[in-house]
Image 1 (cartoon, rainbow, N blue to C red):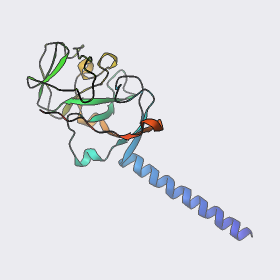
Image 2 (cartoon, rainbow, N blue to C red):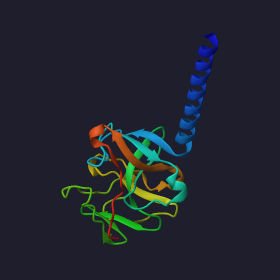
Image 3 (cartoon, one colour):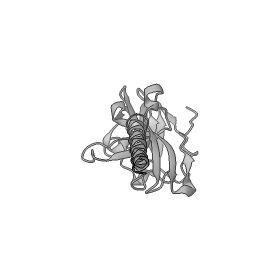
Image 4 (cartoon, rainbow, N blue to C red):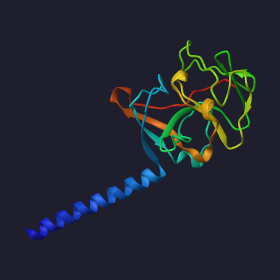
Length: 187
C-alpha cells in the first residue's frame, strides 16, 4: 500500500514538473498572456480583456499595417506593456491632418475597425499637418480609441526590438472570445 502511494505521489510530481516545464518553454518562446489596461484600443479591445500574444511569429513573419502588437512602453512607463495597432511601416511617410491619417500622402481608410466619427489628431511627437518618415526597423502604432491613447503620436515610433509580439486571441470574457485579426488596407 505504501509503495503504491509513493509511486502515485512520484507520478504526480513528475506530471507537474513536466507540465510546468512545458508552460515555461511556451511562455518564453511561443506566447504570453496580457490584460488590456484602459480604453485605448476600444472598440476593438475592452478594458480588462485577457488575450494571448504570439511571440514566436516575429521570428518568421514581418509585421504588417493593421497588426495589433504588444510592446514595451517607453519611459516613464517602461514597466508596462502597451497594446496598439500598427499604422505606419519602416520608410513610410506618415501625417495626421484634419482628423485623418495619411501614409505617403494617401488617406488611410480605417472604416473597417473605427466608427466614422473617430478622428485622429496630432500629439507631442507628431503634430497635426507635420510629415514624419518612419525610420528603418521601427513602426508607428496608434490606439484605436484615439482620444484615450498614448501612442506613437505622443512618444514616437516603436523599434522592432521593443515589440513583444502580435495579439493573437482574446479569450476573456468568454462572450468576446475571438481570434484577433489585423485590419486590411487598400494602400
